[in-house]
Length: 101
Image 1 (tube, rainbow, N blue to C red):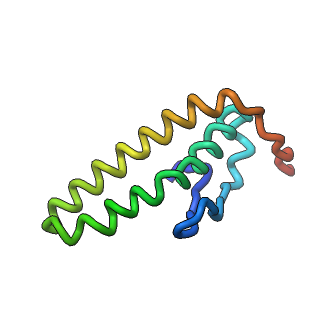
Image 2 (tube, rainbow, N blue to C red):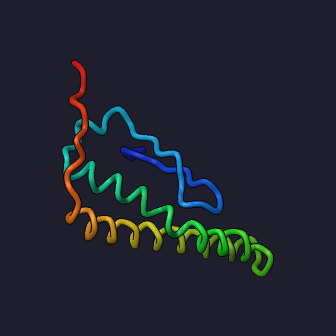
């Protein structure tokens, strides 16, 4: 799907399992740094996203909820990506091991 990393937050905590693809070594330091910051930022909107994800289905029709959730999810991705871009530039480049041949 083109993603270099994905995160699965632990409910109610700022902890997560972070999966990094084997292709990540090919993206370069700045892109890797941005990708890691992007995924880690997902930890900080988890609780508010859960409020929407779990609370709205009780109040809206299924089609209205699906439309709202998709628009909300897209807006969160844009916000997280913008924050990652701004914040990651102030962090050091990751010291990532070279890919074995």
